[in-house]
Length: 171
Image (cartoon, rainbow, N blue to C red; front, top):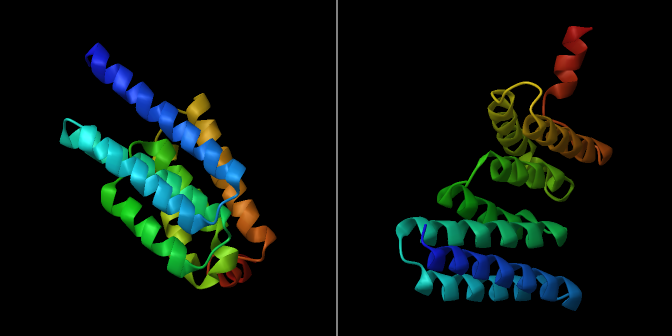
């Protein structure tokens, strides 16, 4: 990567970080956050030079929007479209896949009818994590995140549908 592109990516990161700080400090409604993040996306999509760069900008924005919507404790009607957009764009790496699955599972208290789909996404992410070398820091970190997401959902009484039946059968 040329120095100019490295600097451009640093600029993207700095501006995204600044935007996050500004939005969180302003305590703006999620609709305002989404509009600001979409403006950020449009600006940098115009400057992107390749399909890879455009896809990465979309992923960064989708991740930011999904996180902001998650923090709003919202409905499926608001959360779902952003999750689906993320799935359409694709994940940059395993960490991002786990992050999105964890957000989905932790959001289940607000739309528990989506539990089967959310836990399936989390199980898929976990299978991928388990393929990493045992003892690796990255593997352990991701597994802790997955365990935390399950714990948070359980704290609010959200469980994988059919889990009670499976527990009774195993006794």
